[in-house]
Length: 102
Image (cartoon, rainbow, N blue to C red; front, side, top):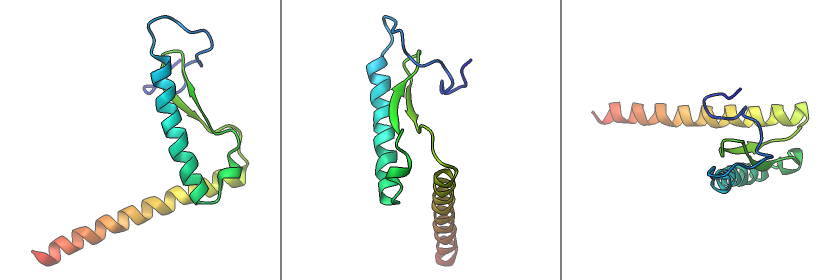
């Protein structure tokens, strides 16, 4: 079974001809590297020791987090929420600034 993004498709253990596995893995690697950089900035790099790139049977890149502690998952969730809150506040401020100039 595969979701619309191919995340739940089976891992590519037996490669099939004509499927761009290297391209997919490269996309997964870029995503894993970006996440690793963000986690390092937050001081969480050691909390995600299983972070790695992978590819599924369809050639779609994946980022695997591996097993993490509940505390690490909670910290990541809090960082995401804080980032979203800051983005929403920035957008609201920009909208208010646009209204003030009008």
